[in-house]
Image (cartoon, rainbow, N blue to C red; front, side, top):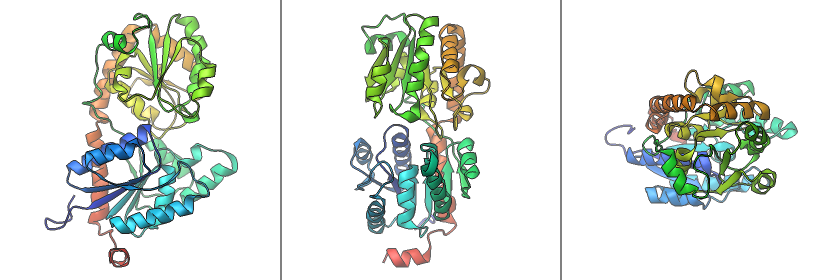
Length: 387
């Protein structure tokens, strides 16, 4: 990654708004890999568990006060971020998610190489006038990104269809295949759920409890699953703004595990993992589950089809917001243990070959090298900011 043997290693500034779940893991994994490769890594983010994890890794963490979503505070947040940029003097900025992507590009305005990674487009989360405004911003802001990194070809196509004229790279998400490994479900389940019948089929959904992840659709489908598979249990792992509403909808067969320090045992305990999202770029939870040798059922949203092994779609892919189709896929797999085992084995092999986080980190490093090696750090910026 060095530009020459005598140059100091590049300094990368990652920028992220308050995040948890998948985006936080992506930032953590990239920071870990880049620190190991000798880069100087700084992360601007609000105080959070993510900040503590990054500090423990050895990253230079700078406090950036920011909210999760755009609002009246945006311009003040962009100004504060611009001061961080001046202080850190990065060679490259990597902004993650819609809000940080907005503030980061406003703060830098293309004066140094900026990588924007949407992790699902902002206009997917809203409708009407707000969606039109979000599409307009993404079209305008693209000029300040030296590269737009999408986690799936579906995410890139969606951006292009919305009129975003980006300089694209598609880098599929990766996960730590050493951490996410198969284990005997019975032993893990006995430890996690000692009061649950060990013979009861267990479906696990890992994700923030929010509209995007679609747990409300899953609960609507669950009654139909129970009619075909009496005694089945569903565990929702995670927390979020919809917790109260979902708990009010849930029957006794649904367990709320809340936020957990380690999601791996929940994947290992599952007979089947489900993620009924309304939109995604490429979700990490199905990749993590497959690395643990578990079959998944996912909705046909951004990146889902690309993340599945060949031949899995007929059993594992259903339309979004379609409770009947979701219930049918879950019940079919719960009633067919040999099929689940076969799908799980193939899923593990697929993730090992395609979604190892080391491949992802290398692909991101290649983007950085291309931008920095092309003398993208402008003389004008060095004179105006580094002085």
